[in-house]
Image (cartoon, rainbow over all chains, first blue to last red; front, side, top):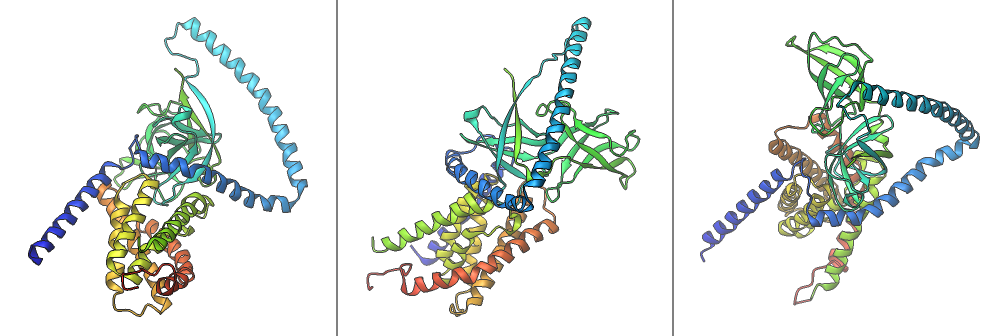
Length: 275
Length: 172
């Protein structure tokens, strides 16, 4: 084989390999529900180590609290106990409303199913996106625990995101602050529909596709609309922080703030649909 | 079988770097200031041994990252392989005793990697990251990786010349 032919063969092979890799990359973008076996194995090997590292990091973070003294913790504990008592009373009240709601539904012969459609599985966050390019987290629990892609993930302060793929014992959650994590939402009071999306760079959200004449105000709550089939209706997303008119004068720029502290997520709940 | 000791040490180093980075360091909440330990393999292989070892280490490190990240699989392999190759190509005639080369190479490779990766994602997904976001990632990573660069370079360089990482040929 002549040197020129050999060179041509090498270049040809490299070009084909690069094109194949680019094709593979384009096929494995965000919405990939089934991860490959090597990826799943690697993740399951890393999970216990990541759990250990998380515990160490938490303990290091807690040193400050120890140094501040036990008095602060006692006061906080007392405060939380009072809050818990108040919440217990509220819970009883809510149960009452629920029963009343059920009765009224029966009276009206409503076709809506008023029973809860989801089970809440509490789990812990074990890692943030290792590449820093995406807004994702890894949580404990995977296919073995009944988790599957597109299950909504929430925390006490509101909507966190959705599961995008799972291994046996770990799941990856796409946060709503990721540029691919857009959610169909509505303003709770006025039922104005829009899409809430993140920018990948901050934890700020914006609500788009809202017409200029929508009757909305600052500090109104934004909840999921239930459209799209992933998130059920009524999950708290955040509140309206600022409203601006877009330069074309047809749509509104709405700045939405989430109550969730995405930088310090520790415990989340996965909504598993009841069978 | 000639280089079995060298290969064994390299494998152990890879395992340590990989599990330390993705099992521990990325979990400590340091964000963009988390060191990229795997970056040093293609950079130092390129600087000290040439383009092809730089390419080989780049491809291996990129593949490992792709498997962990799980998005755009193959992109890191491509980007890291290319930058490892270029690192070896452009540092061919330089004096390797100068530790500033290590620092500069790490900075340039990290910057090139991040820019290329962001550009490729933009081209493949049709949505580009903002320059503010990219520069935040580049500067954060550069700061911590350049700090580590000479610390890691010295033992690697010595080991490649006189120690266990020195490649053996039949003449040795």
